Image (cartoon, rainbow, N blue to C red; front, side):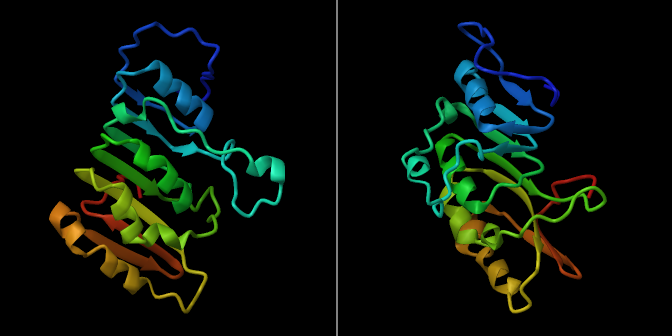
Length: 200
């Protein structure tokens, strides 16, 4: 599905949609994602640049009482998905922790947090992406986890070597998931092996 294709809940879907795989070129907002899963119960594989949760996400620091009364509604039919690929991911770890546990049958996850510095400025780094313990809690059912995390080191006292050791615990060893890192000035890449992106 091309990124300019507009899908919403008004589209008439068949009672039984046999679609098993979707590759969405562009960012998929949460409303569109809900619609796709709701009307495609046979869907097993989904790929997009990212799933944008901002339309529904409530910031804990928000002082608006009316906003605070709203909660993120669980995603229907999420348990059918076995493969999820987000190839230009931008969500913070907190949002990832809400999203991924809903895919209870997920066996393959690709999460590429990469940047094209020729056309895009670096977002504020989310160091919590490098918390291997938090990842363990949400991907324990996965057989394969391919990732690239791009971190802009804006704190000179921050020690990324500590985070690397967390990816070397028994959990990661048992899964046979190995990682490597590269540092270019203040840009740090931490990624799974083999390298999961063919153009960077």
